[in-house]
Image 1 (cartoon, rainbow over the protein chains, first blue to last red):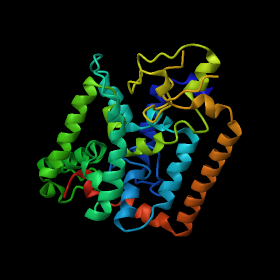
Image 2: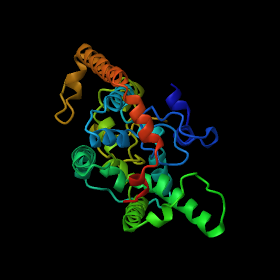
Image 3: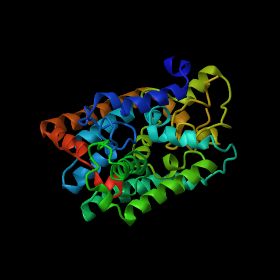
Image 4: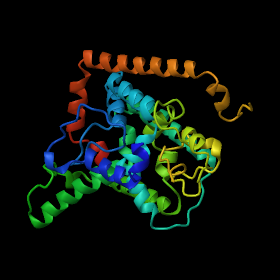
Length: 263
Length: 61
């Protein structure tokens, strides 16, 4: 099976390139909600962030049929496979996590935080506040959009260079305390990622919450079935989301990385 | 066969036909959602939202 033959890191590098293609110019796939958390405000982004799209429709008082349908189809096909193999922000957390081997285990109940995030920040607050509220806090947005765009604008103003991303006009004058709050959230998450495994994916990602609902019923990729076939026990010591109980493999926290079953 | 209390997995494995039917039903349901969205011309709204500068994403209020 192709999933076992290619190392996961190559999938992740492919995901970063696939959803952030710098050499084909503007966002040519803006019509397509993608199954990973990749901010569409990123100057290199390809595809539409499904969480941003869902909030946009709730803000304008409409039902996001295409985004819900696309996420449902992606979920039915492979559950959270995309989180473990293609998500650029998940890859970023995996890389940061390599700084320290000592990891602290988060309590099991924090895994339900992503459902609170989904219901409160993505579904309830955007239509009330008339803005995509999850985006205003999203650390992926800070990393992929906030930092590059504001840095580009700063370089432009300091050194008089060309507008790198074509979106820097007047941005610097608008940067306020909320931007620094977002940077603080990103910084806190990075610190947490050093001492724990993929904390954002497990506790706050609303996309992971949606795709996680399909984990046990997805058509492809089931580590328990592969384990039964191979007859070998799970290797949960290196699980990137700190699953410790064999019954929790393929649960809503599992990102279907298959590290526990691949030899 | 012992049925797991936490996942119910062994029990559900006994009726794979129902599981497959559920998957197909859900797939068709979500495909209908996508088709409904396309018929409502949602695509243009998605494109315009994804290509405009998202100030919320950058962190500007």
